[in-house]
Amino acid sequence: MPEYGRVVFTGASGTKYTLSAFGMDQRFNVVGAVYVITHRTEKTRGGNVQHNVVFVGQTADLSSRKDGMRRTICFEDHNANCICVLTENNQDKRLAIGADLLKAFNPPCNKVSG
Image (tube, rainbow, N blue to C red; front, side, top):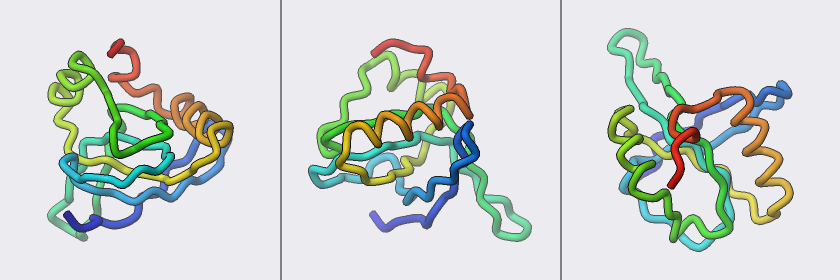
């Protein structure tokens, strides 16, 4: 599946992060990443795209991301249809970016355990 484009999310610190957006069924290589699950909508006028953040996560291996059944149900309940990815192999950096985005968005599916 092709990339939808780039999305900029601003963390609670004010830092801007540019992520690549894909459909939820996108397959990934083994790579460390921060990822943001969103409900992506395209506005008919002006061609703008809006992303409502549903979940923020990080993983050392994006190819085998495991969100768990309860989170998957939460994603469905919030009409999640997009995964936005920022590759980062350094675990400390991933954790810091993830925490910054979590603080900014307080996504509903992060409150659900696996």
